[in-house]
Length: 120
Image (cartoon, rainbow, N blue to C red):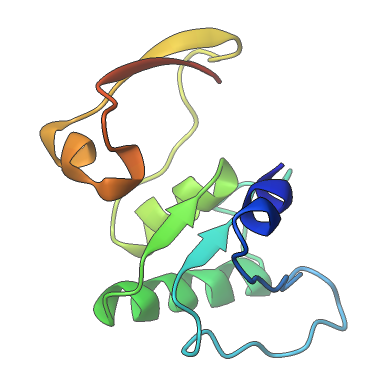
C-alpha cells in the first residue's frame, strides 16, 4: 500500500531489507526521509539489523531528516531516541481511537487530524 501511494505521487523510493543475511550496506544520508516498517521480531531482540536501524534513526533525527515508523518501525524510533519499549499488559487488536497530541496535530504529516479510528 505504501508503495502504491508513493508511486501515485511520483515519489521515488528504495528498499533496504537489512534483515537479509546478504543485505548490502545502505548509506541513509542521501535520502529526504526514512520509513521503518514492521516485522515479527521484538524491538528488544539482540539483532544486528535492528541495531543498525536504530543508528540510522539517530543519525537521521540529528540531521533533521524526517523518519516514519510503522508498527515495529515506530518502536525502533522510540527506542533509538531513548524511550523504553516493553510488552503491553493487554493486547490491542482491533479498531480504536487515536488522539493526536498538540505536537502531532502540528506535524504536516497529520495536518487536519485530531482523532482517528485506526486498526491496532
